[in-house]
Image 1: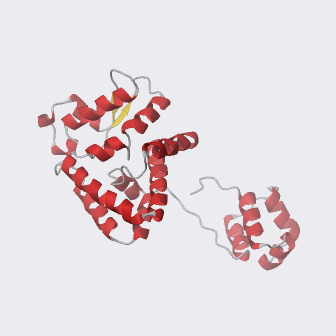
Image 2 (image 1 turned 30 degrees about the vertical axis):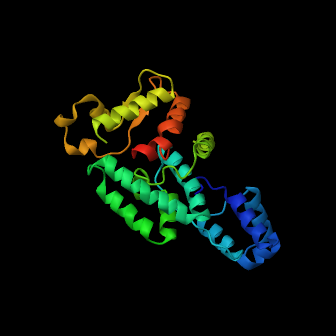
Image 3 (image 1 turned 180 degrees about the vertical axis):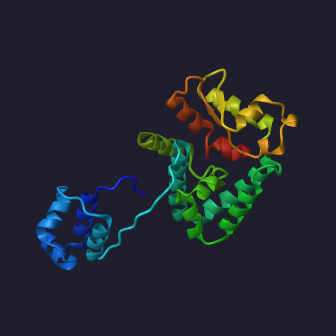
Length: 173
Length: 80
């Protein structure tokens, strides 16, 4: 998710992806070529509704999301789980096998004191469709952050991979 | 995480930065300060602890995280 959007860059990228010229896009969207040029150069800033119309004219969709502020720890956790998700896509069986094994260890360590509700949710996720697991690994929602706090994916990344992700995330944090 | 497990994690975190002690922050700080039997069951609910070096150095935080943090071998081995 992008936290800051430069409308000029966004419009330019959308138009480049569509292969339309500024004049062609203007014709499609019912505006003028110079107006498109002004938006793309940053001389003028389009309203959100205008940007939506222009992006739609390129055959794409403008998605706008409101998300809660993530803490440094949340962002690092998200980066680690994005790397886990990449591994999940490569070899889901091995990753899920390790996750189920880890659930046993975590339950034993928690001795009934941990957030059993979250453990139960992970059980359901691990037995459900892969897309739901991916969504939980990649979501910035508060609930996904809570679930990742009792993540069963320890050991999916080796030490070097973990360190690389943490180092890369540290640059962005 | 009970007190024994918390102390284990604290020792590992201190070792990761070659320090004699670390600062426990967040909800687990109370578990580090008060005997477990005097606390409500909620105090042992979490499986993670937030710790930092005495001076709050960010690179120490990353070292601790790399050694004993989320998804680490320590986490895999001990479940917290």
